Image (cartoon, rainbow, N blue to C red; front, side, top):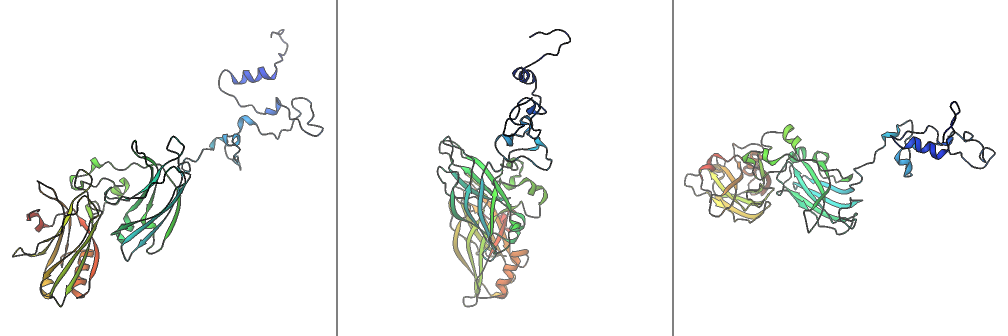
Amino acid sequence: MRGRRGDRMTINIQEHMAINVCPGPIRPIRQISDYFPRRGPGPEGGGGGYRETSAGLAPLALAPPAALLGATTPEDGAEMDSYDSDETTALGMLEFDLLYDQASCTLHCTILRAKGLKPMDFNGLADPYVKLHLLPGACKANKLKTKTQRNTLNPVWNEDLTYSGITDDDIIHKVLRISVCDEDKLSHNEFIGEIRVPLRRLKPSQKKHFNICLERQVPLASPSSMSAALRGISCYLKELEQVEQGPGLLEERGRILLSLSYSSRRQGLLVGIVRCAHLAAMDVNGYSDPYVKTYLRPDVDKKSKHKTCVKKKTLNPEFNEEFFYEMELSALATKTLEVTVWDYDIGKSNDFIGGVSLGPGARGEAQKHWGACLQQPDRVLERWHTLTSELPPAAGALPSA
């Protein structure tokens, strides 16, 4: 449409919108009611010019995406472009309970339910299960797992998972990692989300309830950066490694539950090898074939050796075996009980997993346990002890069989 020079060109609304929108970037319209008059009841709503409408109509072009979906718009002067979707709630919520039993050195984890999990399968559902890990520590050694719930985004488990051998030091330094995954029989299982709970948030003998949004996976430290002495330990929190490298923290190779009792009637020491927990994996399959050896040092006649049976393919073996050392109580006060855990291998030398020494020269819990045994005859005393990768000096010269 052409006009004479000097005349104002008249453009209808359709042409005006096309000029503003195409080509080039979209330009906001200051007042949409200038072009679409508001028609409603009342003398001012029946008709009239383009500028007769109320100025209170919100400009559609400047509204945030939430307004288009019926969501509440930001108030109190918040900027329109500050709106963003909450990505964490898209992964779902997990509800669970934690209880630290200080008397029995156990951590009870009750996985209750999940809600609104992210769909992982083609049918819009998932086959979720929950995995637990204690960090830092060996992956397979402290892994616990629930059953899989099929075809649901709101699974209910109500399962109790228990960690044994948990000490007050663990409560201070360790973190519980709770992962929700989707089981897939035809390919690798898929990660949905995770939660990490520092155990220092727990109080002894007080159950704590959690209902938390799942978060995206946080990368772990690479196992390739670890020394050869840490073989089998491949799941550490990077920040804990850097900040909390206390004495023996990264040398931990598992736990062992020992019972000691001096029998006045039999005139000797009764040593019970109850169980081990969270042992380091020494075999390529991610497990070990552990057994336990005990010596009473100094051993001039080399007759103090005792050995348990071998437990195949496990990192949490249960032995429940007892050994007896005939000896006067006064002589026992000068002795040291050496306990070592080994991985049995066929056709080659057995691998040393970890050990602990109890005696007058020991430290910490080992010294307390030994002293209590000597001071309280005829009483069975059970305690958990930390296995370290430092081979006791006398054990280095011993045959590994």
